[in-house]
Length: 277
Image (cartoon, rainbow, N blue to C red):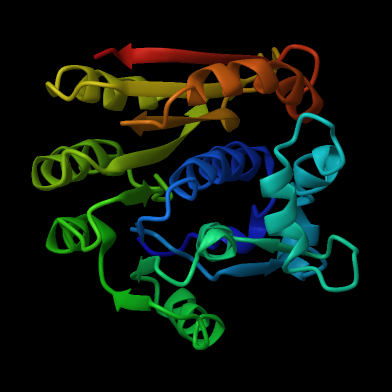
């Protein structure tokens, strides 16, 4: 149940979509002096070595971040967040979501990072030991999220990013976010999800659409499956509740070209309101 290790997939096309979207959200939050809070339900190991055996085994970063790192449409703030964890100017380490969040963190902002995997939680503790205003929680993110809400300060972003190794993660994600939203309806919620050949994300999106929550934006990149492909991930998506003003327009401008750079000529990007105001 806890076999997933992100080291095999760090910096892939899904990470690019997730982290460039997060970077634009943090940019928006940082425009006001008021503090904000970031909550991560499935934090992982903070940093990932792109020269590790795990990363080399899959090579996913080569077709991911290494493909678009110098692309003119990649948000500069996202590129800067990556550069911060690569001291020599070479892209050999990739930041996980906690490190992306920490790169935007100001003195007044706080981070709450949850992780259940025993190996990952130890890495999380080691690598965040000197971060300010950061709390580490060794617990299941689905049950832990409502316990942290509403946060103080009352502005901020929640990222829900499970592995989806277990089919029930789709419904658990929707249920956890619905419950959390009731406790903090003004927060920004971001949910990452895979798009598979045998796709199950549509059922989760249906749950969100029928939840009664308003202002739900979906952002997706995917390619066509090859004729001989019967399983695997062909894209990914981000669902955002209460996204920042004009985020949809910004993403609609940059994602179509980035999608083709990451996933090939058959790739398409869609930015649409699942539920409007």
